[in-house]
Amino acid sequence: MTSDGGPRLDLHVHTTASDGTLELDEVPTAARRAGVGTVAVTDHDRLHPGLDAPVTVRDGVRLVRGVELRVDAGDIRVDLLGYAVRDASALAAELDRLQRDRVERARAIVDCVEDETDTTLAVDLVDGIGRPHIARAVAASDAPYDYQGAFDHLIGSDCPCYVPRSLPTFDAGAELLRESCAVVSLAHPFRYPDVDRALDLARDLGAVERYYAYGRSVPTERIERVVRDAGLLRTGGSDAHDRTLGRAGLDGAEAAAFLARLAG
Image (cartoon, rainbow, N blue to C red; front, side, top):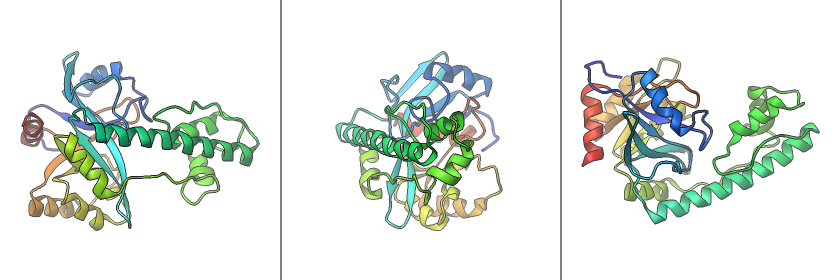
């Protein structure tokens, strides 16, 4: 995050429309509490139904309609962030398909977990559902697992109740976002097992999430080199699934550059 003043942007926030805990109406208050003037609502595979324009202002806070889209690049799966989403039928159709897939996948996971643990889970199989919802339901049930234990023993990759998702390819997903968004960015590059491969994909997008609350030290010179070589726009955000915004984001000239791209 830069430190030369100007508005502060948190460009990666989740709400209850996917697996976050903030209602949309609570976002402005959470933003002001954190000193954030612009928030991008980037729910998983879903446009927030309460946002009806690419950019709106509510209670003095600028809200950017965004989406976080997981895609399959063959040897790696990555998350793409689309910002200032316009109405686009092709993207909407794919998001609808992904939501149906999410519900069907969740139903299969829940059935497996209930059989595996001989318990009943209280979880609503609705649009936006993901494994975190199921893990919370496991932790609240009579099953002998807490939230993390549910992932470690039941629903994580290679666990007995894991069910894969049906994802768009990187090329198809990136094209859908380019057609409907002002900015398309690679999310959290240092969270992937092959960072160099992920950063290579960012070159094709035009932007990368440079600032992110990893909770650990990362070799930022690697991402800066790609930013310079490919002329990438920097984005940044907290990836908030809780009620605390502003752990990472943009200030000053970088914030101004992002907002100019939205306006342009």
